[in-house]
Length: 239
Image (tube, rainbow, N blue to C red; front, side):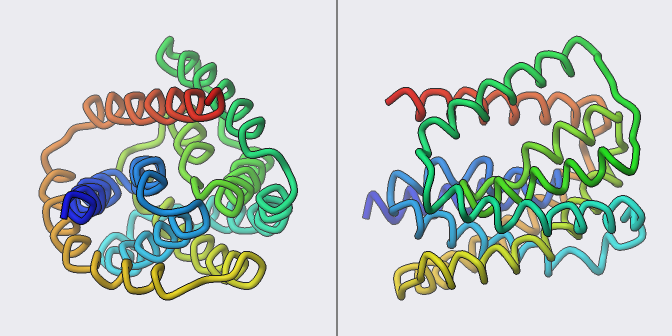
């Protein structure tokens, strides 16, 4: 019963975060799901539920999508997705987590000290490629997008809508790649089914939260999530 309660809390809180910010489900859920499931199961449950959230929200927020940036993010991810799967199957995950954690923490500190970058086509492609790589390797597409959109000082509506639209593509193909090359099982799909009512609750509460947070608070949320992600990956890599 304790495990079931932890699972429900993880899914509900992560769904609220994903709905209200456009990112955060995989960042928050994956580390805690790994306490309950093995790596393959945790990643695939995350992919399934994140895909459900994106499908549920995309029609309502479609007017805020930056379609030009979205196109380049998708093109970039086509390179990153298969490379991430190779990393997942062949490389040492601890070394990968260590490198990613250090990069996330350093870049987050730069953002906190108000270092900004200019959006370009090449940087859109790079962000998409890195996001694809992290999706199939560790189940976390959010950090590259979050760092990039924060770096260009994107509005919260544009950030949420564009990332959720991007997730529709990247989560679907990541799930196909994961299931094909790493396999899948009943536990993944049954657990995802049990989680759906709590995802729906998170969708409702997250929409209420999004309407109440301004751009400044949204940015603080962003930094907290990035710092949490970087520290968590660093700790995990050193175990």
